Image (cartoon, rainbow, N blue to C red):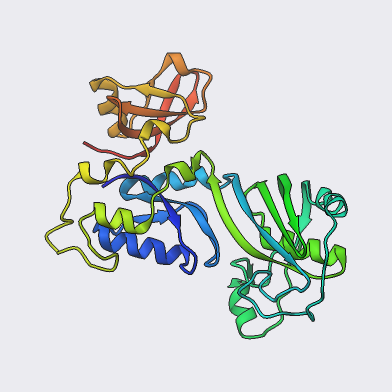
Length: 309
């Protein structure tokens, strides 16, 4: 089973929880995700399955899009609604014009300190592990990019927003820092991820739907050892068509000779793609067998091989 499936992650589960459940009801151990979502967050969580886990390296710097709610009036230690308050609550009546001026300071390339409850490492230890033990967490600011931050609406102490950010940007820190600038404290109350790279909510399905397609009446049911009780056709509608993956890479349809060389890890000549750096190699319309990289002129060498047969 090789492919990419987009899960609409529910609140309350970690990204690792989602991967674990998918492993159980798909009967496939080799599954990973393309970008962690906090437990309180919902939305787009792409899963790479089988040999397609090798595609993860091409999504390390993917842009993300979010919609959510920032609550002003007090800050929390986690910078979101699951944390403990770190300041006394105060009544806030927000002014949209003033908020727009504050939001403008967070657009573009900015210096951002990650939340103390994050996976950022301090001397090899994730910051959240130190924070949970109430140990001091000192994280250095890093440059991130907020490509879009739109204030959608304002209702007393809550602000609805839409954002598009580069990889490594924490919306929790954006919310926290906006509260500091306004002097009233703030935290991220709701967060929904609407897109990761080329993947959007319109392609997503719930864990429950995928479990049913996999022949499991309950998500925690473990498939029998003989193999998953379903066919590829049962699940095909929920997997992203390979032609839609990595849309910035041109596609080449390989003949039998070229495909055999690619599968064997040998260099091939692709004269029509002499200006491309990376290409997707297909056999037929949907069998993605490799990603090849240009080594010189029109010569390409397989960077990863996804199908050996």
